[in-house]
Amino acid sequence: MAKAFKYGLKGITGYLEPAERDLLRGLLDDVISMLESDARENEDPLAALIGLDMDVKQPSDRALLRLLPNVMKDDDGGSLEFRQLTERSVRENKIGALKATAMGLDKDNLVLTPEDAICWSMALNDVRLVLAERLDIRDEADAEHIHSMQDWSQAEDVESYLALVYNFTTWLQESLVQSMMAARQAKS
Image 1 (cartoon, rainbow, N blue to C red):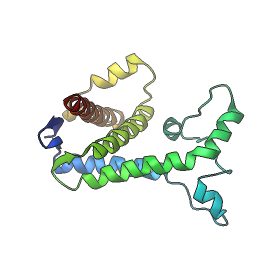
Image 2 (image 1 turned 120 degrees about the horizontal axis):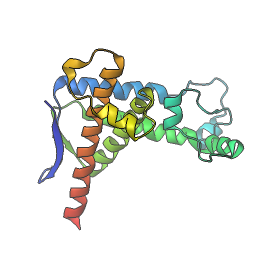
Image 3 (image 1 turned 180 degrees about the vertical axis):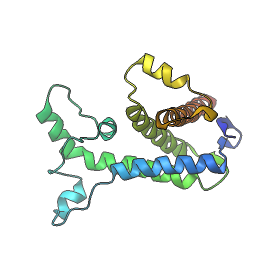
Image 4 (image 1 turned 45 degrees about the horizontal axis):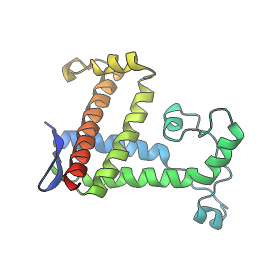
């Protein structure tokens, strides 16, 4: 059974069972797959180098749009321009954090450096955003309904299973953030 992250003499530590690590690795891989762009033939190497993507469009998948939201609510043109200038680097940063977290799952006992903890926090947040969108969490009542599902033996369908996975990743991220705050307070 997983043990919450905690801050101590070794830094931020935690523990995940092999099945929990496999589950988390699968979730991370799924989000990485969502974020990876298709390679384009005849792409301008200079544009790729500096991060421009003039062919980018707003994602049609709501979960991907949750990871890569529009920056201006009432300005589609401005949002598209910003997306063209930044989306490639945002995707690369997210994928980097997700991959670093997945590599950190290779050991039972987790010991995170401050940099590792930031990557883990970012990756868990992205996983939770995707799960929240798949579960159609829109308000506090939806969230409370999802959080009421706690018993793995009662996972009867995809929604109840996803709810339990969402709750697990929420708990894991919450313990990580609390540990990060404890580490920060200990240093000040």
